[in-house]
Length: 227
Image (tube, rainbow, N blue to C red; front, side, top):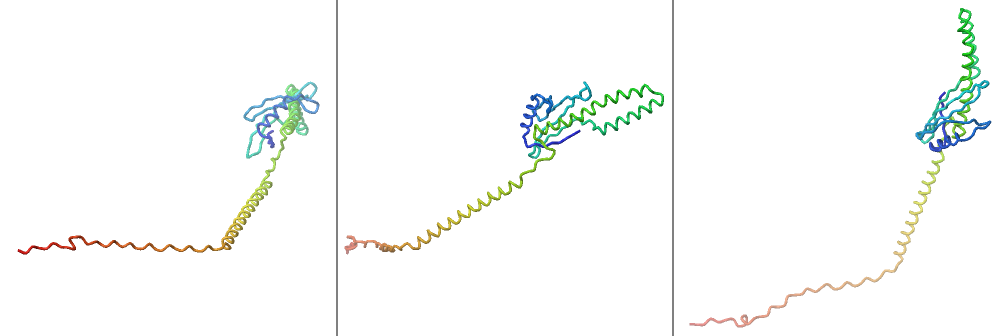
């Protein structure tokens, strides 16, 4: 029988819990478990229980712990055996076959079905009881359930909306503060008395070039000698 369980523990926590459970001594309410654990998430647990008299049946459960979509998943298989109703149907069918074989003259083969039915009863009934106990131990040890846990999407959305609202409120307050500061600065600048305008300095006067002084040659030009 294959099964799927879901746990809120991590893969490491599940393997640690399984390993610790195998070291616990069995009691009347909890059986002794044997098995092994691997680092890749695979593990196996087994138990033995009496079925009829001194005959016992050992059942082995194998599974693997994996992380899928943020959820720890335990996938495994265990021999399920057959319920009492199913066993009754099987034994009645074997009895009918044995009677038919004996009536046809093969009494030896017919009588051989009787011990075969008794031998078949041990694994069918033993696995049916042990498999239920093994799966129950996995559920208790790993706090696993057949249904996946509900995702807390509804809880994260309000938190996100609250953070957005707080950010929007902070931005609004900052904008209001800035506008208030700007208005106050504008009002202060408007109410401040105007200072008298300083007189502009006169434009620089144009400096005229100094008049050219007449030289000696200009005042007394040379005269030509008359011949």
